[in-house]
Length: 95
Image (cartoon, rainbow, N blue to C red):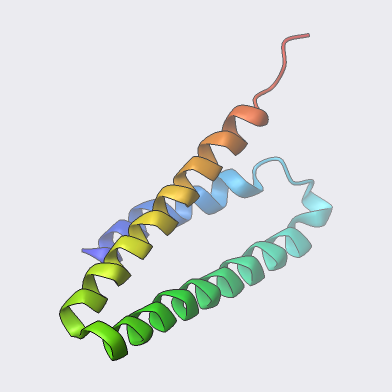
């Protein structure tokens, strides 16, 4: 299910993020985008894993799973809100 979701979302998101990049900057922009994706994925994994193991030590596996799932939901909601804010801010202004 996750793989199918990623296959539907990632290509269009990458296309949208590169559509306004000048052709001569496309390689650099793609590199920055891929690097950002990898770095923030690693940060997200570190945050959720750290929270999971911290809570497991104090309250057990079941509580840790709930906390990890809630943290993932918060991170996803934050990403959605940032995307909506960014899309509204970058709308072309009438001339």
